[in-house]
Length: 93
Image 1: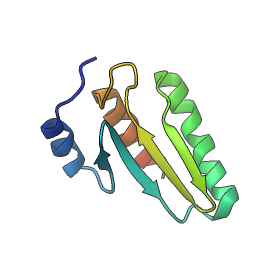
Image 2: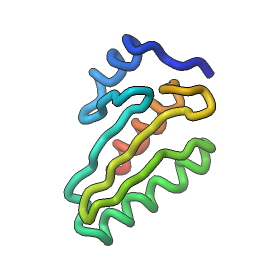
Image 3: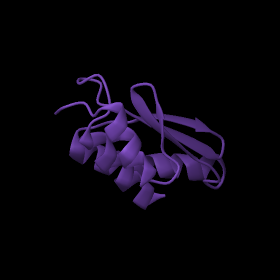
């Protein structure tokens, strides 16, 4: 799977609310998850689609906020797989 160019990533992110490019990753903060329990529940909801895709985001919980970071580590950057998982995570939010 090919790594997308910076221009391709920027174009794709312009159509997605809240996602930002940070170096070789895309990142989005999901605030107001309903406290720590809600944040853990959101992370648990991400588990099944991530496993089905065999593509695992980096996740950080800070009480009521979950930060999701996506990159295809084996490719060294952002690929279509990251964008597909970003869309699924947005649906879960």
